[in-house]
Amino acid sequence: MRNILFLSLNIDEANNADLYRQLVNKMSSRDKVFVVTLQGDASKGEEVVFRRNLVIIKVRSGKMYGVNFIKKGITSLRIPRNYINAIKSYLYNTKFDLVVCPTPTITFEKVIRYVKKRDNPKVYLILRDVFPQAAWDLGIMKSRLLYGYFRIIEKRLYSLPDKIGVMSPRQIEYTVRHNKNVDREKLECLPNWVDLDELYSYEDGADADIYDIFNIKDKIIAFYGGNMGLPQEIPFLLELIQRYKDRDDIVFIMVGKGTEREKIIKMKESMKLDNLIIKDYIEYSLYSKLLKKCDIGLVNLNRKFTVPNSPAKLTSYFAAGVPVLAAVDSNNDLIEILDKYKMGLGSVTGDLESYIKNFETLINNKNLREEMGENGKKYAKEYLDVNIAYKKIMNCLPPSR
Image 1: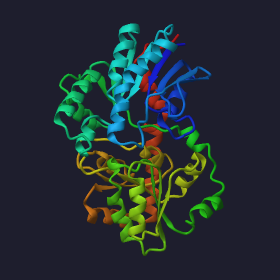
Image 2: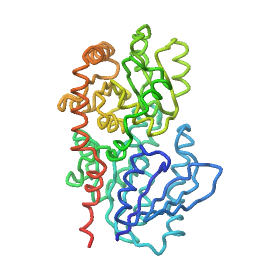
Image 3: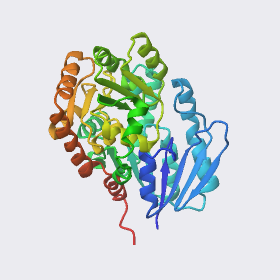
Image 4: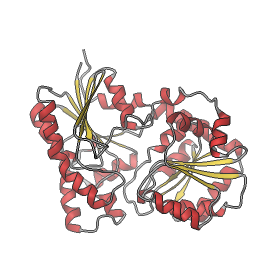
């Protein structure tokens, strides 16, 4: 049995849809996994949770989610010291064979460097949101000096892994082009994943409950699930919703949280969008059942992004057989992927005419929606199952005995 160190900002044990919870569970089915993550409850101190083959160390270090950039920055600066101290305190006798680290926080660089020097493990970096570029694109970070400082740390981070998993082919090209120190051989496509067995374990029953909760019977359902922040540019989605506010046969449902959520609620009220339902959270079993009843899955990304990325919600849409309507930045290859595998339609954020045209195509053609939904299911089984992601990451190590 091997020892794996998993560095994370957040492992949501209560959320079955959490990507990293699913991956950690898969890893701990065969090896010993030690997760170092942030303590989600600011009122609590440091905490250690024991599961079978799984140890979760929750480090108190301030909030990273639902707070402004300054507070998030202060928390980020504290992470290296606090994480290293936690490893020294609780895991001083544990020699690691593999370190797995998802971005975006570049402050894991010092933590990885410490463990690598101590134990000489293999390192797998799961590259997701690219910081500081994403913050620069959105205008959250405006200081060139600060941007340059974080870019130096970012380059140091990329020099440490044996393998770097990115979300799409275009992100491989972006990473190589903007980081001359990164060997292309280190990079591989590691799309976001979903535990298909878990998703499909929820039966299709309780339709009446879902219809009663959301009042969606006999309506075309367009669903948005996930973060509501600047990266998603939800106001553009609201422009689409406004065009259909007088259609009684169409309903939009948004489930999620984020820094822009209150603003979105106020916009809903001011724009009188009675066709929009907003929920902050629903149980995963209900979420998965609701997904299967949806006709369209909505994906939105800010037009200012220069870094290709792929929202995690896509995996659930595909796996549930929901065709996708996407509005993304011009640097993204999601539109090409949707078109290649016939899983949905996409346009560039800001092009409202094309956005509406694609929406019209989907709402007016049930057979097309069903065909695209089935194609999405096939794609999920072939490329997005958590077992596939798990095997790619574990290929860093020699086979266990």
